[in-house]
Each structure stands twice: as structure tokens, then as C-alpha cells.
Length: 268
Image (cartoon, rainbow, N blue to C red; front, side):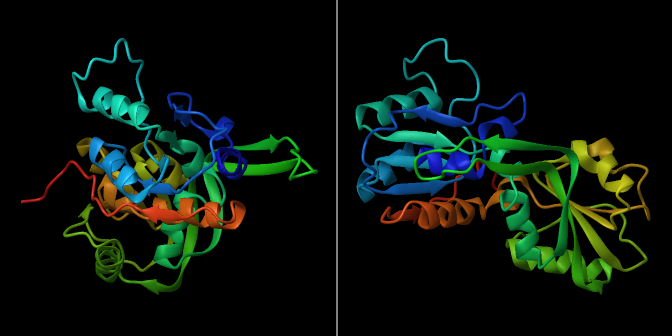
């Protein structure tokens, strides 16, 4: 299953700072079930154990920074200990899955009903070597963000209302509403503020992401509609991407999407 996921979104597509891929466990074990989630916590490992799943596939890496010790001092260390003790493999598909065609950004675009998608930002192609089940090497394309078009142009206020409905958010952080219709939309799930300038160069009418720094909102009124959903909220459908890959390429593996909301931010 690890190979199937990495053929869809090869590790070379990940950003330089990232730590995607197999994090805990072995690849040889037979998969009893896969629990899919955005973040790995102790609660997620407990859920996997209760469901009889011996692999957790997450979007965000549990082990992101080097671990100098494993003593249970924080939730990362405790989660690592619990996973090892219970033979639960943990894998992360992070910026490689963001970038891959059909990955996280494409799923966000799908939820918004966008058409004619194309990559923007840094782009690359990775050759995936042939394997016994795939005799011919494959080329996987990736890009930092995607641009697409709404089926019908929308007024800015209707666009914001659509985002609130589709992503189930209480509020969307935005700059001044555009006084023209929105047709093209640039997307970067998660922390995507670094692509705002590229979105403007693409002449997108709107830029949708999960996080934006305060000062990034300045100077763009009536230039582009900024719409910030929240990091977790923008990537909440990632588990659907993982499920579809596994069900298509790993027949017989039972997938479970976590029932736990791991968003550490609450809105009062």
C-alpha cells in the first residue's frame, strides 16, 4: 500500500522542508485496515487499534522535526510510543500529495466545482520506476497550486457564501470584496500565502487558501479576492483523496476515515 500511495504522489514532489513518507513501522506487514486522517494524535492511534487497523495514513507528518529522544514528554513522543507498542504503521502524504495531479488542491477545486484546471507556482515532473505490477515507468506531474474556472461567474459575496457552505466554515477571512465577478480561482490548501503573488501573476480573480499572514492582505483591494478558510478546513477532504487511491490500487484493503476532528483551533 505504501508503494501504491507513493506511485500516485512520489516523494520527490514534496517540498524541501517536508518529511513525508513512511514514518513508523514496516512495509512488509499485511494490511488489516487503514485509518485515514489529517493529523496523527494519540486519539487517532487509539481509534486505529479499536478498528483493527494496523496502518494510519495521515496528511500531516507526525514526525516533522528530528526527535532527540522518545520519553513521552509531548504528544508526538507519546504517539510514537503508542504506535510502536501496538504495531501500528504511520505514513504521511503531505506536500507531495498537495502537489500531485488529483491530490489535495485538485480535491479542493473539485469541491468548488472548478473546471479547466492547470498548475501554477513551482512545477515538476517525476518519473516513477516500473515495478512488477507496473511494467512501464510513469510520469507524475506536480505543482504548488492549481488555477481553475467556475462554471458560472459569481459575485464576490456569493463566492464567499459558497465557500462557507462547501467547507462548512463559520467565517472566511477576506479582503475587500471585489466589485467585479469572479471567474478564475487560484488554490493552495493549507499554508499557501507564499503563492499569493503567483496567483496575481496568473490574473486569477480569487485566491483560496488555508492561512494568510496579516500583512499579506494589504495592497490587493480590487486586485484579487483573498479568501482564507483555515488550515484544517481547507484540507479536510484529504482523507477522501487517500481513500480513493487505496480503494482503486489496493483491492481488498478496508479504509476508515477518522471520526475525530483533530483541528487544535477552536472558534468561540
